[in-house]
Length: 152
View 1 (cartoon, helix red, strand yellow):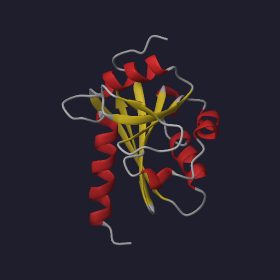
View 2 (cartoon, helix red, strand yellow):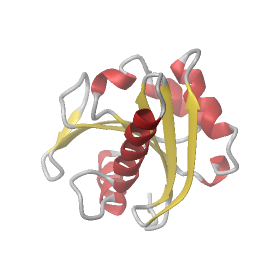
View 3 (cartoon, one colour):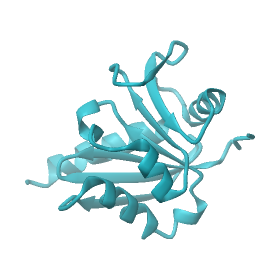
């Protein structure tokens, strides 16, 4: 599969009760930001947040911020991929069940709907100057910033 430089990636970060999803063109620029307060099932919230967006049909891949593995531990990646009809990649610095360690990036990934070589290509396309993909870095920054601003 050929992954284009400006492929659209939706990346979720979740810090209870806030979910943030950024839409990026590769690692180049931000196309959109989606957010919501999770009141029900997390999987349903992830799916409805992206599907209700005008970006849904343009998104080619989904990333999950597993930098805090407990945040999405209840999410079934296969089910999420099926419901969104998009490949899914979860990224973490900590080992988690069935994850693959990518030595060249120094983090773990778990993926559905892509080959390992496609995952590597997607990550390379989405990285800029940091040690994590840009969509993941920005979704996390926005989530943490918004959490500080709002008092739950």
